[in-house]
Each structure stands twice: as C-alpha cells, then as structure tokens.
Image 1 (cartoon, rainbow, N blue to C red):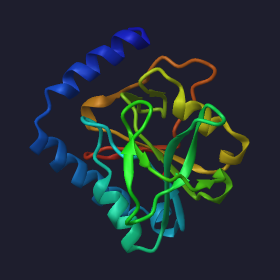
Image 2 (image 1 turned 30 degrees about the vertical axis):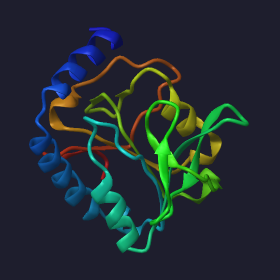
Image 3 (image 1 turned 180 degrees about the vertical axis):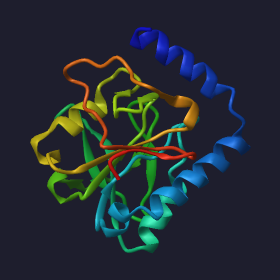
Image 4 (image 1 turned 90 degrees about the horizontal axis):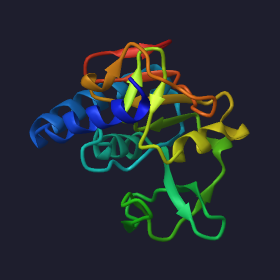
Amino acid sequence: MDKAMLRKEVLSERAQLSHELRQQWSDQIVTRISGFEGFEAATSVGLYVALPGEVDTAGLISACFSMGKRVAVPCFDPENRCYRFSWLEESGALEAGRFGCLEPAAPLWVDLTVFDMVIVPGVVFGRDGGRIGFGQGVYDRLLAEPACDGKRRVGLAFEFQMRDCVPCDGHDVPMDLVISEARVYGAA
C-alpha cells in the first residue's frame, strides 16, 4: 500500500477513536515514556503540542515541567519561512499556528543541539522505526538537521497506527523508538 492510501486509512480509523479512549491510551503512553531511562535523564526535550486525534502530550509536557526539564515545541518562523523549535514556557501564551498547531505566541528560538531527545507525532509508524506524517515534511526537515545527529528520536503512536514496516523515501527520517500504549518498539 502506498503512503497516501495508508495515511488515509489510519487517519480514518483515528477519527473514529472516542475522546475517552484516546485520553486513556495517551495517559498510558505518558506513563510508559516517563519511566523510560533515556527520558528520565534528559534535561531538555523537543516535543509537540498535539493536534486533535494525536497522542495527547499535555500530560507529558506537565511531567517535563514537574521534573525540571526544559521543553521546546515546533513553531513557524515567518522570517525564515520554516519550522524551528521554540522554548515552551510553563505559563506562556499559545496561539494557533500555520497548520492549526498550538505554538508559543512569542517564540524564543532554540538550537537543536541542546536537546537530549526529540519526541514527534506521526500518522503511521513501522515497527522498524519508519514514520509517515501528514506529508508536509515538517518533522523530517527538523530531524534531518545536523544538530539532531545523535539525538534520540522518539515517535508516539497508538497501537493501531503501527505496521510491520511503512514505505519510506530517502528524505524520511526514521525513529530510534516508537512508544505506544502497548509497548516500546526499537532499541530501548
């Protein structure tokens, strides 16, 4: 199955997921990643603010702040016409950005070299680390930057989003780990 068909199939399934079940599974994923040694040791994390239907990261963001971690999220930089990471302040205002994602209203740009880990969403993940997003390439461009070399790349997904493998192109950046409510895929 090609990327477009697979994306459409999984997005359709995701749209039928009840809010209650999505939140239950998201909480299980947050618990699973919060106990992960690599996460516990991280002092700064690149993360995302979830869109409707994605693994909800509100609990993970709260956990990061309570553990004393710095958090940065993708934010559109109109001057450079690309996405970059901005520090997320615990009490900072958020506004809807370019694709409807909530992002800091007053961005504080941060260099990727400071992250210990980058946690990303996806539509479909392969058990081998392959990732299919929405097709805009936002995370692939961010993760392909030389500053991301050596950083742990972690995808968050519901178990039904997992496949044995997914079709990937040369520009698709694989995940080191994918964490679902059921298990951790990849080298922990």
